[in-house]
Figure (tube, rainbow, N blue to C red):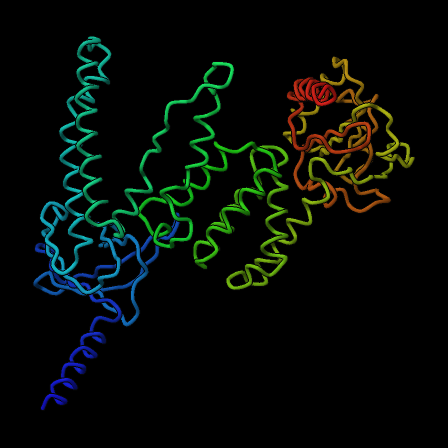
Length: 475
């Protein structure tokens, strides 16, 4: 009999374990009936439909599946309208009841502590926002007295302390919950008072160094749940770190991204997302010279096969094509030589120019932007005190158009050549000059020191470049 009871107990445990596999979330929403509701999920900046359910005449519906949902924030959609969010963590068998259209205030959760905490937090924050509104109004009112503003700030700080205390309570009671992860990820980094240097001065860089060193303390780059939040927090954290805390130099950024990727590597999702986000970010960067980061990332993660677990051949080929276009004309690289025919059908070599600086100007005689940019470049060439030679490349096959453009745009002192009439590889591939106008600046060794820079910035750039070179030589 005892053996039978033991066997029966084991069978019950097995049956219960089977019943808890996958997910089953029951809803009852008063005010909804005979319609279709969708369960959506976030991933980075995107949203996806995960499941579909039919709402019966009583407002009841369920989402269920044999495989557990990924941890994160999900949302319900009706008629393309997002109704409310829910949190999905370890417990994926629970029920929720509420009333349309006041979903959050009327929400009742059964069987899931995660969502109980989540909705209580939403209500608490909503109440604090309402409490803060009168004081916010005072601060926004230009007629408010200084005393009134000071009192408003004091009251807002008290409200803020209530929110912090409430969140600390969640961290203490449910430290491993998804709600706790989100709170920690949003926590402000408290920076200690800067110490004094041996000479008695305050260490002016301490705050920056401390903030940078502790930036990732509360954020796990390898946790895929951080990709599935209602705000793209993961991307924002990474981009904020790269843009605000690091020197904008390709070597510095490349090294930092390699380090971040190593931290994210234990999860395929976070590894993929971090590498892809960084790769796309630097494919066409706003800051000159940072396209080298894209080339470095392609070489390490895609050319090597590291991302083969998700990147298909078409994607890899597209990235390879772009990386190969860029790598020949990176800032700091020797400029590829160009040998093309001028208006008199004489071969002119880019590397034969002996000036201290050489400007390569890719233009099209019919290009509207070029007609605005060329006079600016001509004005710079006439007024600058720098020793500059200009090698202008016309993209049009017509020699007649090129000759007319030279006369119309005061380009007689430049070396102007016809791009299609070339003895070297096509200039577009060598210099990523698929659009016009495009300007490159070379030093006396024909090393690229600037690329895709507007003509109006050339004088300032060369001034700062020579100042930087002078400081470097002094060091």
